[in-house]
Length: 251
Image (cartoon, rainbow, N blue to C red; front, side, top):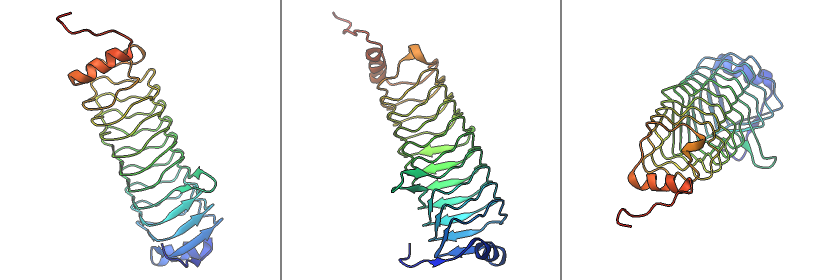
């Protein structure tokens, strides 16, 4: 991001987006862009602080190198957006942005920081989140649908209670200490992911592919894992989680 950003207000931002569809090297502070409508706008190397984008319609948004601090996207429509190298977390106040009930269908987050962001009840069907960090983010009751891909992400302490992750590609994620209670992961792919110390009570793992996943704390007595795919070594780990004593056949 450039060292010096041009400070603009909400009216100037709306005008530029209407005329050129582009904001580059700009800073907006405490701006009200609620219900903004812009088709395929481009945001590049900007900084948004305490900006409201509630119920904005920004389908096809292209955003790179932009930092959003304490911004609100509640109810916004970002379908088909491409977000690359963006940060949605304020390290100073330890607050993330809010995307509650937002439409994020077919949206791509690549190499983004989503720590403590709120995606509660958001529509994330067919969304792709890759190589990103979402420490402590909340996805409570969020719906990812069957085509979402969340891969190679750091999701420690994330809250995914009652989220719909059925049939999603969840390969290579770190869910350590995450809360997946009541979540649907039916037929999801969790290969090479870490579920160590995750809360999994009432979670649905039926038919899930768990090969090479770290299953510390994975206890079939507290969840539904019928038809889940495991490797032999993992099966032993699961039995140990249940405090069973497994001896060799020749004992």
